[in-house]
Length: 314
Image (cartoon, rainbow, N blue to C red; front, side, top):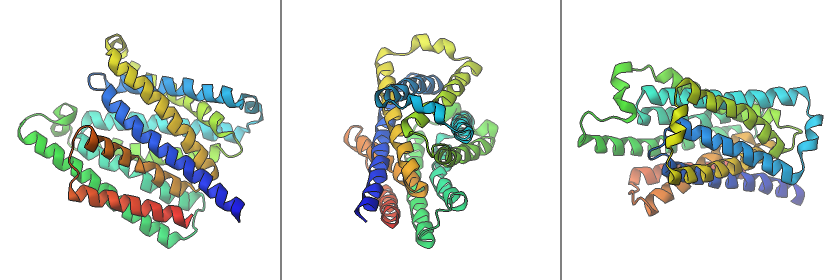
């Protein structure tokens, strides 16, 4: 009994650490892309993540176990990496065509989709009715938080007629961004499911490092295809420092995340991971002095309540 409880606490702790580091990532990334192109920043961060992941593999000594990986593990780890890269490509394409405040809500729905996929494909049907209710509560809370961002953005635009996120391309492309945003969410959800299957029987740190080997060339391919390689020379040193720290935090978040989904319940882990917004909100309130409206506070409370309930059910 105690052993089982200890195992649950182990993956829950890993998921919570993943959430914390993911929240730190958003803070550092915000500081690192004030003037740096987002695609270039993503490629730099991914390079740091890869180096960090393999450093951890060397420290824990799991590299020799690579020879024992089954073809099935190789395939699913590769597919998980491809899904991550595809999600990023679609996400940035959606951002280039549409308003950030319309793309983000769809991207956030990946957590709910991942939960439903885990139920359908991985058989995580314990306490199914309660789990579905909790998922609906989390989705509602997420939408309330996103609405707060939209309201803030709209308010900011009132005094700057003609200025829109993403270069004001929304009007020219209509709903052209929508399919890319939906695909980004789908691929993000598939990343969790494929990662869970691929990491079974694989040391989690090694699995993360191998998966990142697939993501890295895709992130640099985005930079090359969009002709942004020359922008590396103009990256601000201060912002580069924040990007490097962001990469380390991303690596730490991924390591903890894949440790959690390897030993825990995916449908719960993906929801805990989304609570990184708590760190981001705290940063915005303490450092940027952004107010937390009642609507946002209600959404945040619903997200936390739904996630805690799902964790207790596990």
